[in-house]
Length: 116
Image (cartoon, rainbow, N blue to C red):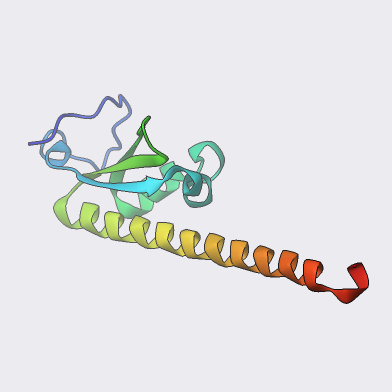
C-alpha cells in the first residue's frame, strides 16, 4: 500500500482513499520535464484533467532523474503512465536527434576547406 500524497488539492475525479493507494511510479530525466509538462509545470492540471489521474513530481537529489507518481483509478493510472513514458521517450529521441544534427553541423564547419 502506497503512502498518501502531500497535495491538498486532490482533483474531484480521484476517489479518496482508494485511488491514492498503490500509485504507478516511474522516473524521467529532469531535463525533459519542461518539454513534457510546460514551463513550471503549467500543463500538469490539463494532463490530470484529461487523463483523470493525479500527478506528483519528486526530484531525486542524487541524480538527474525526477520521479513521477501517478494516482487514480487502476486503468486511468496505467494509461497515464504509458502516455507520459511515451512522451518522455519521444522528447528524449528528439533531443538526441537535435544533438546529432548539431554535432554533424559542427563537424561540417570544421571540415569545410574554405574555413581553413
